[in-house]
Length: 122
Image (cartoon, rainbow, N blue to C red; front, top):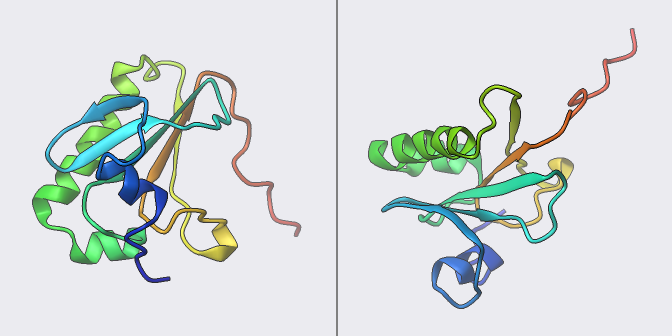
């Protein structure tokens, strides 16, 4: 999957589409998902043009990587989900149902999230 500079997250980063901002710094933007799957559903995106986790981890600067990881942890903590828990998820590619070709994390919280994946049949 190649980076599409007209994807919805690129448009949000350029200010062409509004978002409900939760956090922003030099390298990261986080905002509430417009179709939340849980009471708290925040998308955390790097400001650079990265398609996937592999692309981001290979190509982003050490400062971008550190800022991204720290931002995700800070957002979950600031939203009050440290004690009850939260889930961090990144989808990559068609089998994982990645919908936007811009690397991003989902932070899910606010209810019991259940098992992430059913146990494999033995």
